Image 1 (cartoon, rainbow, N blue to C red):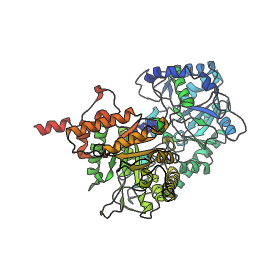
Image 2 (image 1 turned 180 degrees about the vertical axis):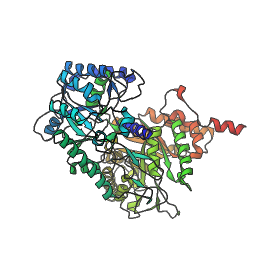
Image 3 (image 1 turned 45 degrees about the vertical axis):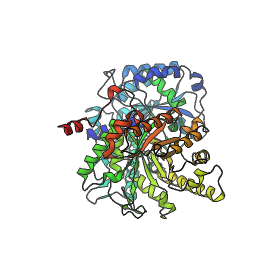
Image 4 (image 1 turned 120 degrees about the vertical axis):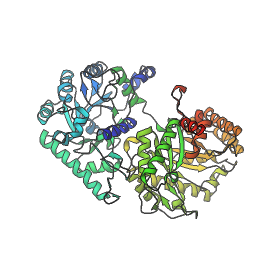
Length: 618
């Protein structure tokens, strides 16, 4: 169980906004120039800072609990908040602002402490009284009532608060209490390969029946747990708690609505987006890690308020991989292949994987199998869930899934409903890529479109919007789910690329463009011409991925390198390879590492093929 908790917490680290100590120096210049900005934030904007255990003996670096903060640093942080005019607020203040009854003060901060550790009473509560600060404590009620195995593994034996201590805190007027679920602070079986994933958003896999729990069973389990948690808190503390703070930040739109039915209209996840009191039912929280000083916490808060990361601005290095290569006679062989794949990707140091998750198995030109449970296509093998989870937790890669839009336009399958089935069992995906096939050919070739072409583009964008709306309901809110359109260039006539980009990006987060520049250099020249007409913001939302001839000669590899470098010089921040294969990974590592890798240090380079080469030499 301890390893399960560590794995689940590693996902927390990927989703939460964290500024580690070593990055503070590079943020100092930002933070010294944003005083005016933070003083002028909207009256509904606030930052939520999330703590866990507080100890006197936390190591400055490398403590056994990465989420712990020292009593000294927490006290210094409270002193800094008071000195700098920050206003610790209550859940009720957020609720009033959401109901438009009262504005939040400038520089509002919601202080929260998860898990009910004893230090919340022995160390945090005295500091709250000293500074007259309110704070919120998120309690996993089953832990307090005797389900202590996981709690003891996390915090040690006899290191949880009891109800009498919490009642004392509640009566002071400084402590509010929220649910951290009753018994969802754990992992449950999520796939046939035995991964454990967050209980709150996972359809449990039932090995006895070789199936997943039904929608009805999942919804009943979540509502029952949350009602029990609310009932326990309200009865023990004499309150009417309105908020759920989700374990591991794991929450979907579906579980958010289930929480509302259980009596929790306020919902808190983890993430990197700034929070408006009236922006929705779920708010994102900044997670404190690494025993930070007040200066580091300041940088984090400012980043949360005024530099919230826009996904489209991020650099990304992407590999596209067909899950068909993972089809295996048994789970043991599948795990060996998956391990090989993840090891190769980790050595390449790309950060995003695009998985093709359906296939034309009988070769008749129509998609007929998928690699996830669904009712519209046959399931060849249940491979997607474990692949996504292992990619996220083992090598820290975001994962998009690719589906062809022809499933709806040519095969009559409801793509939105298929994606719902995909997302239900894969809430950890980053986003959806819709492959447009030949649907955009008319738009690509011409700068102005006739009525028929305009209607075709409109139809594709409508399918994409409908699919996004449906699938987003089941994916983790903390991950900031995205959608993209994928198209292939096969002709140098791309005069319509700019208007197509403008149209597509009004309804899509990203646009993925694929071709082989060595085979078709004239296409690359035409694309360069189009790029000159685009704004930086438009370029930031483009992905260029090359379909590489992996039997290329030495001179061809140099050309691929040059084309990648030219894209980077043209301010394209997202690049990738469109046809990564297990058996040709060594060629990619050898020839395109510098172009595709996010690793900037040659000291940490690792070649996973050295042992194979040495064995071959023997």
